[in-house]
Image 1 (cartoon, rainbow, N blue to C red):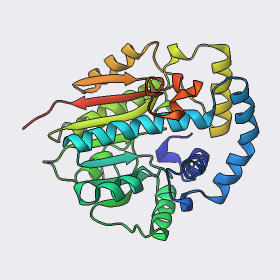
Image 2 (cartoon, rainbow, N blue to C red):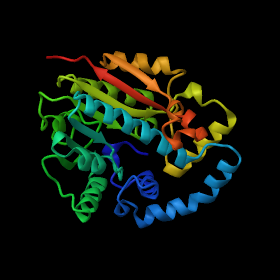
Image 3 (cartoon, rainbow, N blue to C red):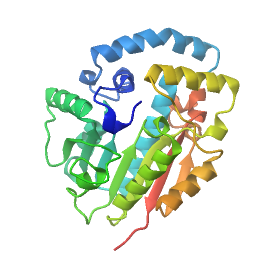
Image 4 (cartoon, rainbow, N blue to C red):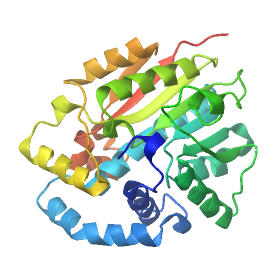
Length: 286
């Protein structure tokens, strides 16, 4: 995947994941585009073969990380520490649609993506009766911009500075080299430090946990599928946690979706052990 500032196309992963969410009833059927359904059908034989051999599947990986991120966000909203959400690279994720329906006026949810994807998401949301409003909207973003209305800081400036806020980057981090990831984490931490409570949720593939030959082959196939390199960062979860704290987060932990296997069927897929879910917070202020 190219850097956001240079990309205008709708990513193939956004189309594919849109079909996955709809197939598993996590999304409105309208989010499953024709392109996404065709991509899902094309990949289905390989997924069935891997599953039959006891191997990981892309579908299982996507569902496992999505379920655990959802779980963490639900907990923060119900605890009263988060009432505003910015989801960067939201793509065709149904999370904004689902959370806005469930929590209504209790939250403000901003889905942010590159202009082409954001325009498509607005169209699809309008089709299902969810036009932009005060509690749920879609925004254009350049996640690597240091200023301006389309930067993370610019979008955050439209929110209530007195309310707890979460930033989500599902399916984004491992498309970029470590230097870009560190800069993005600093930008997110700086932004969240402007709110009384800040929560950062993301997925991350840790290099040290993905050394098996079969896993490396799976990652290479994933790189071909997404038309770009998939980077494997850090030697161990503790290294990533230290990097997050160095970026400005007060706490950081990397959860294993496999530990949620008793709650979510998707987390029983071997792919659940290939990904971590980041849960990082900024220091609470009054």
